[in-house]
Length: 329
Image (cartoon, rainbow, N blue to C red; front, top):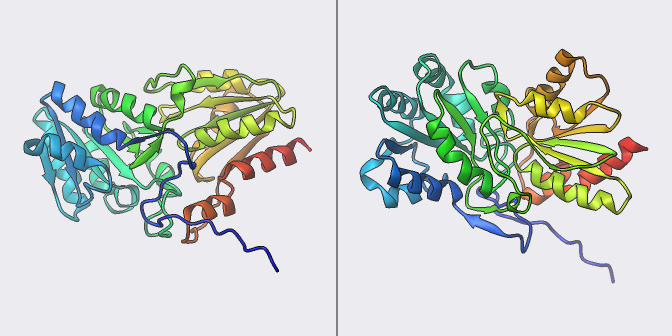
């Protein structure tokens, strides 16, 4: 009798990437924004018919008089947010990352970024955090946004990053783009004496053989892979870079200088994201040596169960470990 094949399943649309039994925090963005608004009357929340799916509904329940449902019209969402910022409010506008990057780019660029307004764009389902296929997988959002002047880009790892980032984004001059992790978000960084600081990278652990430079949910995977590689007698350092732009070149370059294997890890296409940001900084500084990317391929991805897709496209912890061992030979 053959052994049944174990099938990896999850909700395709709003899927959690948390491991079974892993500590999580529910709707960290929504709660952080509601708490900030209780202290700052300038905070307003807007969404394009996606309040429930970007955790903005938590803010709406706490501050209904400061919540604006703009309907399925991202251009209107960003235009209204720009107008609110012009009169001194601090808007947080949520939608899916694909709609922010692909559908409303011109409004963000000319209505918000060019006048350098304090508008905070919150993009749900970044990278491969949904199984719904190319229409909802924002695998190239950072690549689209990196060239926009004045725009700050944040790719948080977990609930700690999100909770601490929200007030700093509100206080930052100019527009920001947050790659939102929503729902039950893993809580990881509380074990590493870590605090989010806008524009800064952080060394979470040291290591003599390999240096991981990671952002977003891939920092969680980097830490897991580092633990597993220790069993293979491979000592791995992990540098978390939650702010993609402006990039903390000084911290990252200090860590990747030397003869250790350097690996970047990101929940984004290999084109135009963290890998190319690190590689560009290294070339400009004259830091030599190969940099190995762990990233999504330059292609439209399949639909399916999220764990299966992470395994197929190399984001799963086991795939990261295999990649490093193969590079070390």
